[in-house]
Image (cartoon, helix red, strand yellow):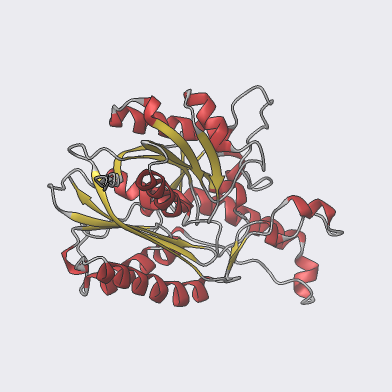
Length: 382
């Protein structure tokens, strides 16, 4: 006797969407001129103290900086920071952020929670649907417990949480991870946070880089519910390629090294010209090939939300992707007032410049940085 065959229906794969974003901006802002005044005061003091060694050629004199040089080199005019007084004190030139006791929330987690609450308020969904929290950032306050778990606890969320670090590309790597969790049915919604105190790893006594970074925190809710106003994730792609041209050697093994942690490479260091020359073509080709593979005409993109590292890099990538000179509203620049905020930069750009999109219009979130690493996320307004 033949029994009728059972036909099993394949469950629909949830379509991941960016449901909401959030932003936390630190309380202090530093203009280029304020930064230059502090830096030049340090330079003058150094050159006076080392006058004899400079005169006999054993020490090279330090060169002063200018607000005009900074803006021309980077496009940056100011930056937000968690502490201003320590950075602008020539004898200190670093943020002063006292360590908190273990029974208080850590400063990076506190920033992440503030950005998350902004995103959750804009989302309006059920917090119980969030089954995963990802803290994707360039610097973690400690190895463990994970900041993501601390944020999860502070927000009263359940499920699982973990930290991930891919330097300036952390947010797009986090978005892909969140989208994959949604597509696989692991959870209904994911919260990704990107707290960045970039001023903490910056050498404010280095003329070539002392102006680059700022502090901020962003958050993104990724869900599987295609509600009106959300952003359908059309495709995500990641790429890494090893390079020493951007590096930070600070880590737990520094205390085991005979020289300790006093070397300059324990802060942010880069070979700027090499980075520009190598990253721009890598990222441009990645964007174009990804668009081609998912059937998106890059010239039809309404907006690019690129990593905010350097205005010259962004402008060149914009020209290569769109095939022409982008208009100001097509290639969003926020680094003039935020500076480079590492993983958060492309998310700030997206968060602050997307309200004019109509349903069906498309854009690109893209990040790139140390590693080298890069991530592309094509989105469409629902």
